[in-house]
Image 1 (tube, rainbow, N blue to C red):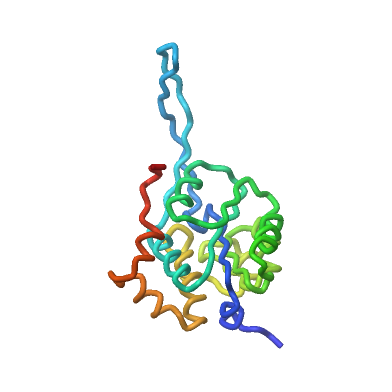
Image 2: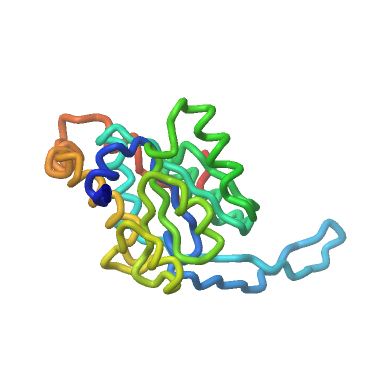
Amino acid sequence: MTVSAQDRARRIKIILFDVDGVLTDGTIWIYPMPVALPDGTVATKMVEAKGYSAHDGAGMTLARLGGMKLGIITKRISETVALRMRDLKIEFVYQGEAFKMRPVLEIMEKEGVTLDEIAYVGDDVVDLPVMRQCGLAVATANARAQVKAEAHYVTPNAGGYGAGRDAIEFILEAKGLLTQCIEASIDASNPLPPSMDIGKGGDLK
């Protein structure tokens, strides 16, 4: 019997995301930055930058209010990713992972969850090994055709433009929690939402 995407979503306890093309639009900006050396000379360091959707960040607050945990698994290693995930207080952050099932299995063991309780949001073929095994496979609107073909749900928005939020809201709606979580997130008497996602723009203090 075929299991619907909504039925799959109801089981989810952990949502995992790729980064480039999912939480960003896939563009990687690399620009030179002058760096002063101890001898007084100036060298040039190449710095990587990415753009993230604030809608996704707010959506992660909704996911936590719905009782879920969050993580990212990406093949690239980037300080901008580390800073953004620190801002959002993401529980599971894995960079430099060419084979993404390894961290998934580690998360499963650590959290005591099954594959059926994990959702994964991806956009490219490197994401397929996890998408083929997890409980809910989500492809972004900008995903490669091969990835969309194997997804249980395709987001209406592209990566970097709210795709992460789409995935979260789909899961919360299936659980019957979306309206409740939205109301909790804007309730001034609820101390939890501000503690979750007040980012400092990479300020580590």
